[in-house]
Image 1 (cartoon, rainbow, N blue to C red):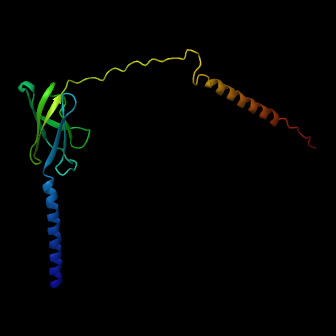
Image 2 (image 1 turned 90 degrees about the horizontal axis):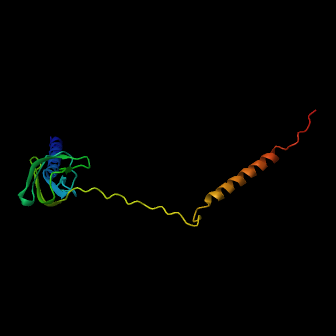
Image 3 (image 1 turned 45 degrees about the horizontal axis):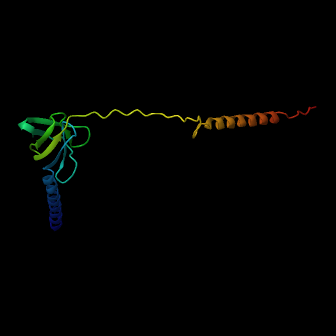
Length: 178
């Protein structure tokens, strides 16, 4: 009986250690960290991670509300995950130009709340590229202007050498066979 008791005690101790070591991991996974920032135009981006810094491994529901200049209000807007990365959310164009106080909430089972001040700007297109002037040398020469002459001369020399080799290679005299 003593051996059976020792085995059962070891099994229960192992089970207890397994459950106790998993409990802190489960507890820390129940909170989110939300990082809110402007997207450089009229939207907001949110990066959601677990509070301990691990990447978010599931889709969560995030809701955005914002208060802007002159008391303008936006939201609640439900945010959808974006393909740019795990835990990355974006609002799209929801703000007008100005300074906005943006709040993002995540309801249970992973509750979180983050507030940030975002400067929204009207979207701008990149400037048109400036035309590049191509300047040709005025003296008709220049660095690399006559390289093709050297290449053509080299090809003529190689062809001539091959022709000479072929001529002298075929001028063997045949000996009459009896």
